[in-house]
Amino acid sequence: MSDASYLFLDKLSLAYGKTIAVKDLDLNICKGELLALLGPSGCGKTTTMRAIAGLMTPSSGRIILDGADITRVPANRRNIGLVFQSYALFPHLTVFENVAFGLKLHGLRGEELTRRVEDGLETVGLAAFANRKTPELSGGQQQRVALARSMVMQPKVLMLDEPLSNLDARLRLEMRTELQRVQKESGVTMIFVTHDQVEALALADRIVVMRDGAIEQIGTPEEIYNSPVSSFVADFVGFENVFAISDGRLSTKDGADIALAGTLPKAKGLAWRPRAIELGTGPFTGVVRGVSFAGGTREYVLESRFGSIKAEADAKLPGYPLNSELAFDMPVAAAAPLQRFG
Ligand SMILES: Nc1ncnc2c1ncn2[C@@H]1O[C@H](COP(=O)(O)OP(=O)(O)OP(=O)(O)O)[C@@H](O)[C@H]1O
Image (tube, rainbow, N blue to C red; front, side, top):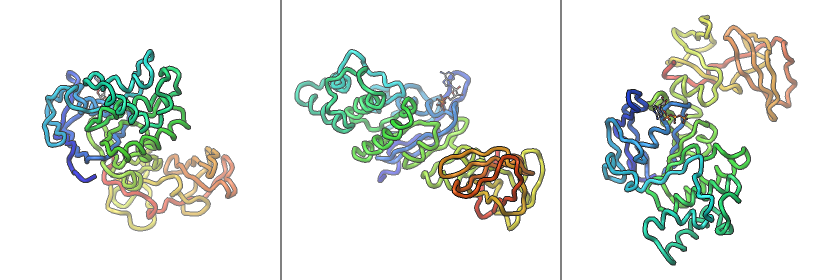
């Protein structure tokens, strides 16, 4: 991550007719970085990616890649790779032929072509499958072919749209590791789009959280996970218990104000992860309305004067039965302060 602005989106606005999908987006992407665009459906992730790839023209703003303004450069001259969630492989061609396809279009033939394709297949661990037809491969293997096909073009940036969403849970984990390895070994700058926070946290060097066509927060996975700037990001990364605060009191969804012990930070809100809620002790009481066993922990839903509270406790501890009443605490020190609420 040496070059601070390898790819630079400068006040980029993107629209479909009258629908503004992305507004004044500023973003710097470093060379060799693995960046995730994360956000709920409709927040503008795919639109941003399409604009970088040259599949749509911005209504205003610029895209600078490696020092050159590519805003008006056609897609086929940008050297940006795209891997879609549907792999769009040619079923009648072999793995080798699929990976060779783009290189042939660029005029490569003979030994050079063979070497580049073999290197690509080696990179994604598919050297032994070169002569198979793609329908004879598993979903994960097809995804690797799609990855190899893009990688052999030596793109300046490789973009992946929900690359793991079509895979089952086990394969998704495997491909996640694979993608990370290929990216680190090749040093290619990658941007992937996802609505899955777990995937973004696990894979990315940096995460861009988008909301309504704008950036809500940019940070490392640790920053996004531990220090969300807003209630939107906190909700999105699983804090579960997110409250507004004003005048030293916490406001609940149904309009009650509750005083918490200790000094509240200068913030617009506080957010607790379920495991930050202390059960069995504290100034508040709640009634257990839901218990579910989650392996190492038990997850509780408590009904309380805060409304519904999600809490978690070690499954080795004795559980609290459904409808039982228990004391709990929401320690201010264990909460993430939020700069923005709503
Ligand atoms: N072809 C289109 N015509 C009109 N509006 C569109 C079109 N494609 C997307 N939009 C709108 O642009 C906005 C951003 O959509 P976009 O597809 O970029 O979101 P996204 O974050 O990628 O969502 P998803 O996760 O569902 O793919 C949305 O309001 C969407 O309805």
